[in-house]
Image 1 (cartoon, helix red, strand yellow):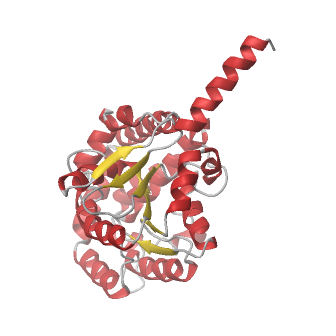
Image 2 (tube, helix red, strand yellow):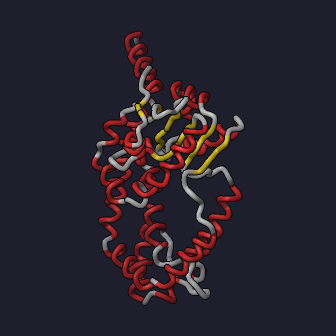
Image 3 (cartoon, one colour):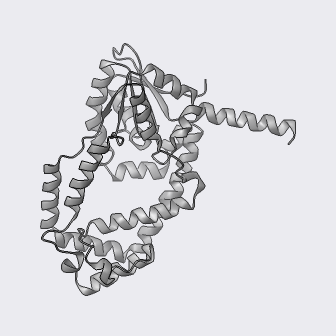
Length: 312
């Protein structure tokens, strides 16, 4: 390898390491010390953190950390899984074969065989499919997503995800770790299950619409994975402006207010309260940063200065 090539490679790696983040500083509005936001992509490995000097500096300055959810709290996660499992199942020991007719089951089985290479009507497996109809599209979508991610090296999950590593590092330092989201209590999930049971026909109609439009839905996921790979490249080069202005993320935020706008508005008081106590590091999905209802704009509207930390 020539000297010129080595120098070029070194400069490229230095640029990636210096800019590899969507890291923002929050100051002003009577804050005594700045707080920080790391906008993450949930498929990124936590091993990237040690290559980001600005993140290490921000991490050292902060006295507590807030994440979307503390996924390292295994007891809470187990409780949530148990309650969620109960909310997803059909009542009275029924299976999906008790609530859907033969033609509907045939269509569902066709798609299951296509995605999972599994026969849904196999006698051994048949008794285990006791899930609500609404669960099946999500299950299929997750499987397609994982299959497509495996085809794309940019999205390969190597090691613990970045959000969880941030939380674990904070705990190792003895810092307080808070949740921006609330883990649903079991009574809330029980009410959700009751509502789902009352709307089985609506769920079935929605599931059949999904199955009949399956090829288009699948292509939509493939397109999303391609956009996610591009987002990963933008994150690794610190190109937040391109990320925030891509059609993919703009549509994601606009079309899913429950995931973005509503949660952002619920998070804002928690963020302000935490910052007023002590310097805080916030770690959450980068999609929550963008747009007029994004956390960055909400903080600016509230009188704070928010700036991206770039190459130093």
